[in-house]
Figure (cartoon, rainbow, N blue to C red):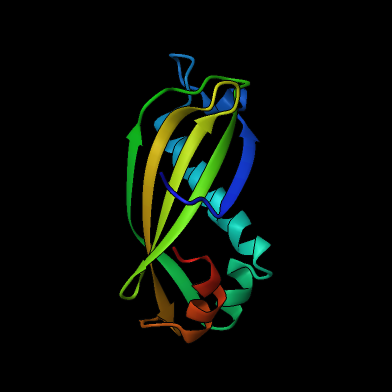
Length: 134
């Protein structure tokens, strides 16, 4: 069981569904990204502010395992945990359907920092995220 550090509740919009009436797989990546952005905002900063300072956390790899489809109107919760391995930040991001807390998606997003356009450890990012790393 993951120790989640952030949650974001969202609702499926009609246009996110495909002809089968379920959320198109590409939209789950948007949900995960939005949850990471909201998490960062909850720490008092933003991706835009970090970028202005020359720091860009860049997605290096994403893995998504689809478990249960979401349908139009479903409310769901994106839960986020964070680990650090070397230079990489690993976001464990799971999505649960709100009505029954059923697992919808298990996601792992690996991000690496670039500093002034070069792959490098970021002391500012390390300091910012240290209280959340499990």
